[in-house]
Length: 256
Image (tube, rainbow, N blue to C red; front, side, top):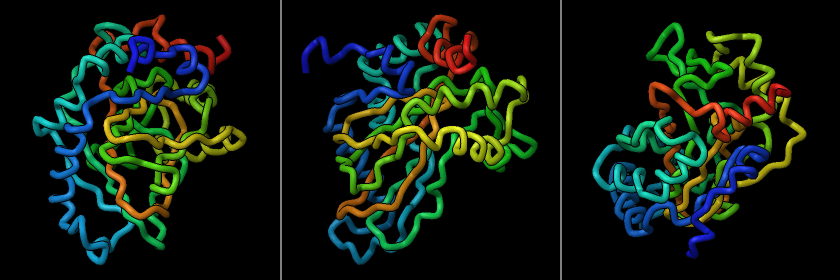
């Protein structure tokens, strides 16, 4: 990889809502993390007969290999480019991991949506979580690939440019924001004409996404399970800089 490859295309991020960061962390770390995840699925990597569910959601991962994968110099530089130096917090881990298995069954979690970041009336119920127009509580959505992911391997679907459709929906709700399901329905309708891209790539790649990007899971039609973490990048107290691509995109969505 050349020095040119290390730069972030901030213009593409503002326009499309995401960038694909190849080799964001070493493949060896991806292999180490994936071995831990395989163990925790309770499935046998060499016996597809044990892969009985379309998706297995694993708990919070903060062991050293995951922390190392989330805090490479390449990623930190990209966070500075997209959020602004000092506007984000180092990753303590990589949160939950949905492991998707080849299956003829529907996964049941493949609707278009925007991630929520603010606790709602019931902090224990994710469906009550909210999102506001300043994206309080989330600087980026991130997709960490711990396995090679082709287009048949249930890559996350992304509506290109859909992050620009969301600010006008959120603005009338003010600081309180909108509940997850309410926003999901309106954002899906507003972005339905957008082209679709797929978060495919190699183990060690990361997709850095605007927090308002409309995205969805999908069934797995390949042959090997897909391992991916989707943590937020948390903002610091000062949050994304006013001139950061994250903020610029929100203003563009609002027509300013």
